[in-house]
Length: 302
Image 1 (cartoon, rainbow, N blue to C red):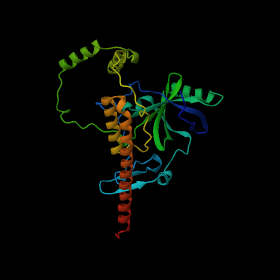
Image 2 (tube, rainbow, N blue to C red; image 1 turned 120 degrees about the vertical axis):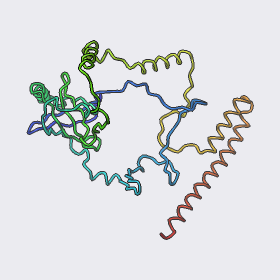
Image 3 (cartoon, one colour; image 1 turned 90 degrees about the horizontal axis):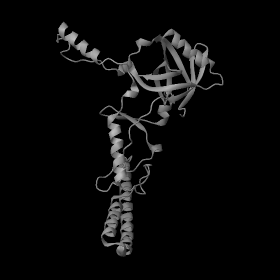
Image 4 (spheres, rainbow, N blue to C red; image 1 turned 60 degrees about the horizontal axis):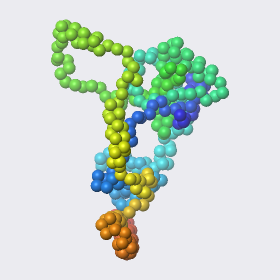
């Protein structure tokens, strides 16, 4: 495992240097979207709806919209907020283990000792075990202030992020107080529950959908029912992509090559060269026209 964050758990004068590791991982099969006609990858672009340009990450800001107006927040604006300047996990209080509602639990991380001596780490772990307490802590990760529960799992300290109180919805369902249950019905229900009683063993449960999905993929691979990955299937970097004319030209070339064979490949390539040049000229004219319109708009008085 690779550490995603390093800091220290602090309370009073006690300082426990730790590294933070993700405690969970997804077992889902990663799938991507393709065109059903030819198996080509579907790509999404960061395109500006005003100028039509594809925008690289370094030129993307964030904004808040209230329905009528938008406020743009630049990197400089966000830098004034509490950021990941502190590398400390501050203990706010120690609470009984059963007081933390599981609905509040979020992402889980393991803490590992980073100093040459593990004594402070073991001391904190043993203290939490023997007092039956969970430490409620505050720390900053990825420019967000987070509340978390620090507790013991096996021989390790587990840091589990918590939702804030205003992020928990209260159930407001009608008719729950109107239903009446007889003692006989309750006894029968309790008897049914007892027939299903067992000790929870996570390993005894499997994700049947993922198992069947993997089996389906293996069967298709074994049968040769595959689509060869094209040269353009590398991850999207948000860079320049083909315009419509260029995409059409290449599609026509591929279709002609498949129909007429290699003998017609040379003439198709020559025609494609002229098409590419024309498409490039049209693209430049369109871009020049957009810039001219934008300049005319900026010069007009408000």
